[in-house]
Image (cartoon, rainbow, N blue to C red; front, side, top):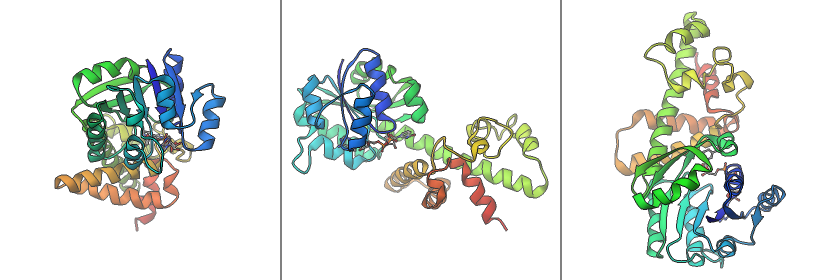
Length: 301
Ligand code: NAD
C-alpha cells in the first residue's frame, strides 16, 4: 500500500517505521521540526507538508496520529493557508485516524472525509509507546465493514489485536469506555491498599487474596500500585510510566465530554475524571497513573 503517515510523535514514528518495515511505501510528515529530524534519522521518507506527503505517494491510505480532534479536523480541511489532506488525496482514499479524540469529533472527521468523496475509519490504539515500537498495539476501529477489511492488513503491521467496534466513532467510544473502567478500577485498588495499610494488612496478603478473588482486575494484577507483589509494575520503578497521568487525564476529559453529551449518570467516571485532573496538574502528569495511590495516602488523615 502507498501510505501517507502524519504525526510522527512518540507513537506515530514507530508505527510509521513498522509500516515501512512491512513493505509498505510510506511518506511521513510532522509539523514539529524535531519530529521530522528524528523520522529522517530513522530512515523514514518525509515530505514538506501533510498534503505533499499525500501527493508524493499518491496515497491509498492516509493515517493521522495527532494529539487532538481539532488537529485532525484542521488537517483534513486545511487551515492557515495549508492545503487540506482531503483535497490533496485522490478520490476514494481511505483516511484512518488513530489519534485519541472525542466520539463526536471522530464522527465529524468521518463526515468531512465522506463528503469529500473519501472513506474513513477511527482507529484509536492502546498499548503505549512500547506497543507502538513492538507492533503489538490494540486497535479499536469504527467505520464501514468494507473499509475495516481493507485496513486490517495495514493495521496488523502495527498491532496485534484489531477489533471492529461498529460504525463511525465507535472505535473512540470503545476506547473511552475501556479507559473509564481502568481509571475507576485503578483508584479502587489504590484505596483498598491504603485502607489495608491502616488496618495492619500487608500488601502481599491483600494481593494474594484479591488477585485470586472477586477483586481481581488489571489494575491489581498487572499495574499493582504498591511495590513488591508484581515486580514489573510501575510502583517498583518509582512510578515511571507505563501510562502517564497526563494521558489518563486527557482520556477522562473525553469520557466526561461523552458522559455529559449522553446524560449518563456516571458518578464514578466523573469522580475519576476530577481525581486524575488534579493528579495531572501536579507531578502526576509524568508519573504512571497508578501513582495516584500516593495522593490518596497523603490526603488520608
Ligand atoms: P505526540 O505529541 O508525541 O505526537 C503527536 C504529533 O502530532 C506531534 O509530533 C505533533 O507535532 C504532530 N502533529 C500535530 N498536528 C499535526 C499536523 N497537522 N500535521 C503533522 N503533524 C502534526 O503524541 P503521542 O504520544 O504520539 O500520541 C498520539 C495520540 O495517540 C494521542 O491522541 C494520544 O492520546 C494517543 N495515545 C498515546 C499513547 C501514549 O502512550 N503516548 C497511548 C495510546 C494513545
